[in-house]
Length: 263
Image (cartoon, rainbow, N blue to C red; front, side, top):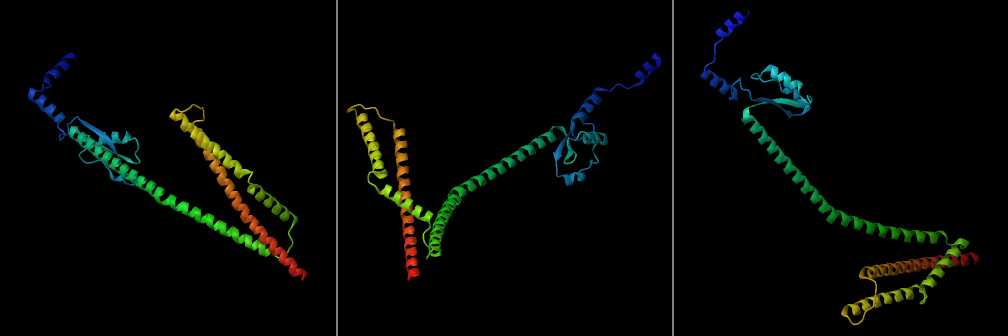
């Protein structure tokens, strides 16, 4: 057996140097079927187009089947053969171009979002404020209409006890607010104290004399609270005046109705 194996080894031709160089060249040549630098990548396609990608005639069937088995998602990915460094370079360039396209699209979307935000700030918010103002105006007009309807509906009827009690309560509140020694004078007094504290702070800053007062933030908070209270009281007085006017009209209408009934 050893002699027969040795005889076969002697009969096998030894490749020459040129043959070795030629084999190495074929291994590096992308155009050669013997090229060793081959690798299958996977492209993402639409699921309805997967069946269109079949094995090219110049590719090895065994390698193609192995690539199909290793496909991470056969429903939307197809194998693509890259041979040599040129194909890898082309694929890298295509990926860079796709990344730039994605970046440009994202910038376009960001620009659209910015324009929509500007439109929202300049147009939508302004319209919303205008609609709110119109809504308040319409609500006020409806309230006035309801008041007139209520007066006409109750014309000729006597005032109920709960309505008389409400009228008395509103009149008392109006008198309390109009008293000079009540809320309005108290607000003016507090406002004067705030102004005095501000003047004291200015004198202290000039170095004339020292006096410990609250900081500017506390003074601003006091001033804000007083301004809100003053505005609230003014609104209450306005509402009371309107309600008293409505009650007066209702009383007058009821009195006229009673007189006409007695006549």
